[in-house]
Amino acid sequence: MTKCVAIIPARGGSKRVPRKNIKLFHGKPLIAYSIEAALRSELFDKIIVSTDDEEIAKTAKKYGAEVPFLRPKELSDDYTGTGQVIEHALNFLKQRGECYEFCCTIYATAPFLQEKYLIEGFDQLKNSKAKHAFSCTSMPFPIQRTFKITPNGRCEMFWPENFMKRSQDLEEAYQDAGQFYWTNLNIESEEITFGKDSIPIILPRYLVHDIDTLEDWKRAEVIYQSIN
Image (cartoon, helix red, strand yellow):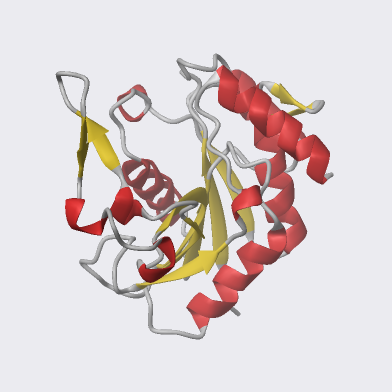
């Protein structure tokens, strides 16, 4: 039987939105939405939260996740990558004799996460030879027509040759949706996640919202309410 684990990284030191992971979003702690979507999917033998924070740990347990350890301080600063956090959690489980075939990293800041996309990602990955399957969405505008603002306050296109091209003639681009990342732990690959060994699970743009600032938070609440 295939064994799957979900790991939700959630440190306590959010700067721009203080206590973001457990701040109430439409009446529930933000992290609760990720835990509940993982539970509804019925894919996982275990759902764990990796945190350095006692209050986050208590909240995670309340909503159905396990918190078998508190993350060490050296993996809880602003410079620690998600990959290091996941590796630490998997090593902890392995030392307890728990081995998994598939791991799904789910962000704690994904209230728009729907279990059907978690299921789609898993189904596509397990029936392939790919290493990853992750959430993404299409860009709302052609990246080939983007520009930057120079130090003297003027504009400079990244690709000036595309200025006269029609939008519909430019190749569509996609971006990370920041919701979930499936990994087949039995496959070795040197490719980055956004590479040839990954399967993109395309979400509609209205379900993709970064929540990094208070303005992002307010916007997400308005859109969530309109959808639900």
